[in-house]
Image (cartoon, rainbow, N blue to C red; front, side, top):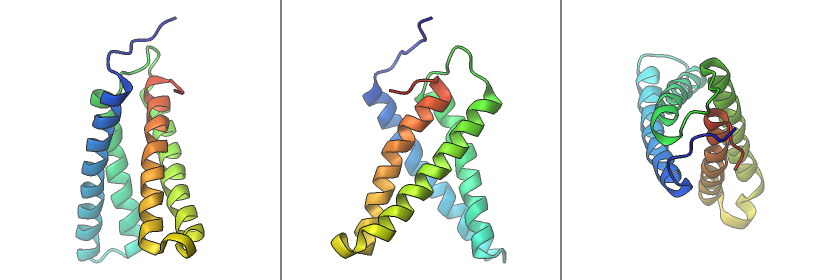
Length: 133
């Protein structure tokens, strides 16, 4: 069965990058507002991330990627959120842990973010379009 694939990967990656920038702004704004309201930083961080993930899934599943023919909203969201959190957290943690002696802490963090974003693109495509590559 051939699935719909109306847009080239480069268009999808560009759209994914735009959504990622918006996600970052939403995450930071949510985090800042929750901390200002007195929520502990770790709780505010998790809730800000959760708001951004929900936004990201909603936009990416409607604008960035074509939904798989057998799209299941709950299953796709679970795959999207779990893979995204593991990838983002994993890549930034590994980069911050391993790279500072070679790059410095700030550069290591940026490398982790870039690697996470690229891997998250393929994870999002997998969770929404049910495609690996």
